[in-house]
Image (cartoon, rainbow, N blue to C red; front, side, top):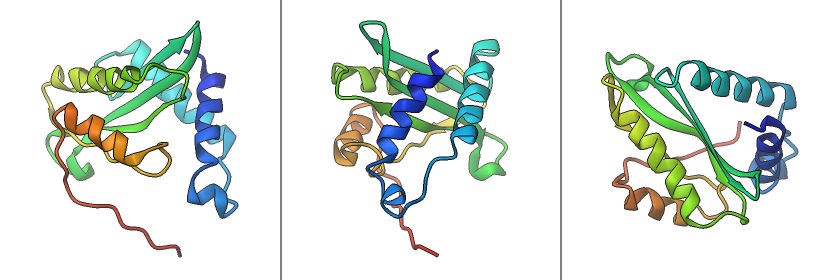
Length: 151
């Protein structure tokens, strides 16, 4: 997987967030470390705690998903799967992000300790409402809401 290209996509997406607008930057070293750990973990143990997949256009990475399997609320006996990152550029076919998420859901279904897939949409996605519609098409249902307060 092309980690430098994935970093570019993440960095570009970050520019449209409230964090970038407030001057909060990405820690490039931490970003690379997280991506390398997740991708290597998936490559060496495909049924481990991380899922990683990309979509390409003309041989270049233009979208990706990184998922993680963790205990429910970090204290449960069973696990939940969630996406850490789910992004695609406007160069991909609109069906590609849905395929990435579907593949993560299929991965979760194969894990006997996983009881749910939980994902959210935030403004880092070009269109949170469109991403929500994609999730609903894949069978996910609304569950709670996000709130934030700057401190």
